[in-house]
Image (cartoon, rainbow, N blue to C red; front, side, top):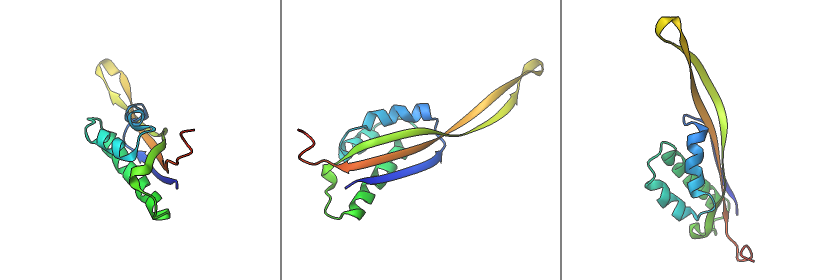
Length: 117
């Protein structure tokens, strides 16, 4: 049974969140959560909660699903809204500041015995 979780407009740049997402892609949920506990990146606690939520959603839809059999089937980090403003600099110049946001989607699925063939 497949479980999904999504968060939108989270204040982490997509480029930085993809580094963390690549660490846990195609791993079992337990292994992915342990990996995220010891990852020192801003996106790690956000993705940790998202994987927990996706696993809980899968278990809610099908109560017979065991958490040990779930793996991270898909994790996608898309670009969200970018806030732009100007910061004054010396000699009348200005710098553009971009505050980037992300949309993160996690899909966990139960590993079946036929997947290995």
